[in-house]
Length: 248
Image (cartoon, rainbow, N blue to C red; front, side):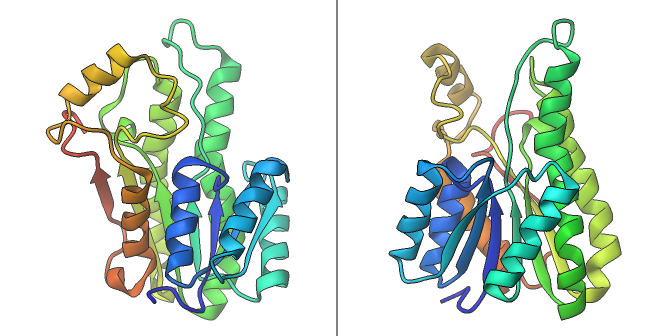
């Protein structure tokens, strides 16, 4: 097993890509700490699903866009699991509008959830990873942060910011064997994209040479590479996981 005896924190793991990452890591023997805004039925269901796989898993209520809440979350995980080896910064939302119509609230909400959370969680786990002299952080960005997208200035800015943050963090933490990489998915079939009109989905797929959306499991496999010893000499990477999407 690639992640036996490892502990991973995964933000936003109650559905979609985050849940797929948690399940894939559990298959490789990894214990999982994950979070959501509240400890609800969905969180408990994922927790039970993971524990049934023979690993230790626990869901926590945390606002990872708040430094205080993120630090409390990491402290609770360290108390319950003893150590943290992997951080997957996956929490994210969209709130789309053209720039001329976008409100300040829409801008702030996406920037805080998608970008500030990466800062808060990385800063919160850094002291522990620094002390133990190892760690792997995988930040989930998007091809929208590379090529932009109409009506998504807030999302594109947040996802581009993740890449810039990662490039800097690599230079600050590499000396302590802390690896930090980015996975930038394209159009992935999840709950978040489920409400997209069929006509728009068809248009997007014409811009993908593989002619299909990606699967959450494919994003999870990319994260597994970076989190495990398979990617032991990779840091600062930005993987475009998009089927060759135009402008990605």
